[in-house]
Amino acid sequence: MQIGIFTVGDVTTDPTTGRTPTENERIKATVAIAKKAEEVGLDVFATGEHHNPPFIASAPTTTLAYIGAQTERIILSTATTLITTDDPVLIAEDYAKLQHLTDGRVDLMMGRGNTGPVYPWFGKDIRQGINLAIENYALLHRLWREDVVDWEGRFRTPLHGFTSTPRPLDGTPPFVWHGSIRSPEIAEQAAYYGDGFFHNHIFWPPSHTAQLVSLYRERFEHYEHGPADTAIVGLGGQIFMRKNSQDAINEFRPYFDNAPVYGHGPSLEDFMEETPLTVGSPQQVLERTLTFKEYAGHYQRQLFLVDHAGLPLKTVLEQLDLLGEILPDLRKGFAEGRPEHIPEAPTHASLIAQKAEVPA
View (tube, rainbow, N blue to C red):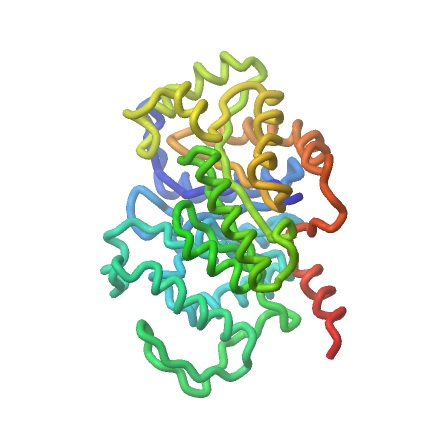
């Protein structure tokens, strides 16, 4: 079971102090958070991709390469890579380069998670979002697996005899997760390719998450990648912890109430009741998180959002210390009742081993 964190890279004013970090401070904080994640024993650090204020999460490969040079073990990923507005040729080249620089510690999550105005900035039509995701990924999939590609599609200049460079490390492309919070077409896409499916798992009730994960599992089996329960599933989530649960509620409430995506709507208590958001003691976070497998099945990756809504860096690093303390019990809890045939999340090493087992 891979357990880690993801960031969307928002620059948000701390509602308790009125202070807004500079872009430089937020970018450097992102690096500090990733290094701390490795220090406390987490498996994955993932960064989002946005091209508009208040986010600083553009150029994710630059960020991940810098982090990769200062870490040794942690898997570097995205949450998400914009398969709709990014050129699939550049994605193929950028992430293959990152894969080489980090000795394979890279995977990607594809998604459409950009805001509406971004589409025309990159010459795209938001009404074609799903079609762009499907066509661009089909090209990316080929660029990483075929040395010479001839291509004609609806949304991109044709390619004739094109070779993407560098080629993937060890001839093995990075593993891909397809992220979606509401689109069955993306669950279908993940199942078709036998890739991973990631549900953000923040804004919606568990029943909604279960519905999309179930669809992906059914279609994974339909495309003969294996039994439905062996499909590769990842979930998100947001947590905030203090040793005393009421302290956690009191401290997190102003951040929740003023967060651009949370605030000025349902109360913190109602949101915790209706969604997987968990604010409380480490024990409460441990117990709530382990209930996720009751409706998602035994899954492979759990990522938490811990640096959102203006939380200062000091507080975020404290959250990672607390997460590190419950990490052994999280791993133990996820392992309980897990059938032996359920695979772990693919890594570069496991994908190479898998290729070696396939008859030539």
